[in-house]
Amino acid sequence: LGKLIADGEKDIAYELGLQKLPPVSVEQALNVSFSSQVRDLYDHQSWIKDQIIPSTASDDETIIKTATYEGVIRKQATFASGPVTFTSQSPIPAETRMQSDTNQVYQVLTSGEVQDGEVTVIVQAEEAGVAGNLAAGAVLTLLSPLPGTGST
Image (cartoon, rainbow, N blue to C red; front, side, top):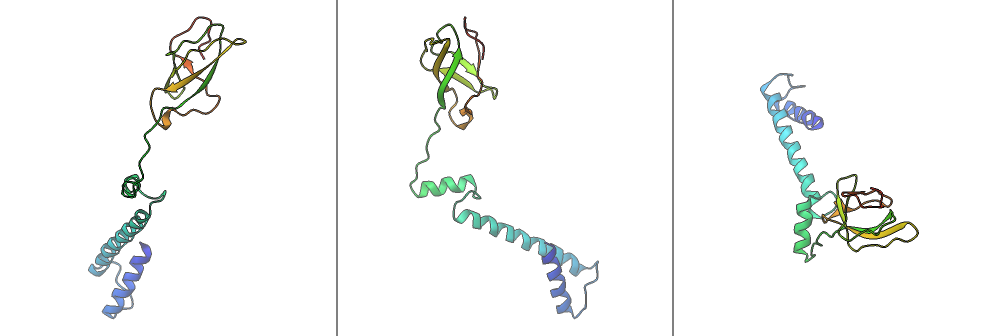
């Protein structure tokens, strides 16, 4: 913006036959206003450039519309799932619920049997999408205690 204002001052002063514009004048006010509007146009052109060819700089809506236009079908969110191992002397029944430290809730899909003091079961997030993804080794806490099983 500063360069636009400075260039505008020089142009106006030249057209008026002056060496320099006075610091407070109608011409100076008009120049600042006009330069600000030009800067807004430059910003808008920059935004348009980012929308023409979808990229990571594009708005989500632009990417979705372009994909639809090109016939690319958006994948539906899926439920995260994976193995969880408990230290337990008792089997873990299906539909047992547990919670992560990010408050995401998971449910055991099929019951698991004890093998060498551990039970491994497959759990699935109750909410579809990336929110249900956890890093390997994440700790889950049982929402209801199970006899012979620790709470985490």
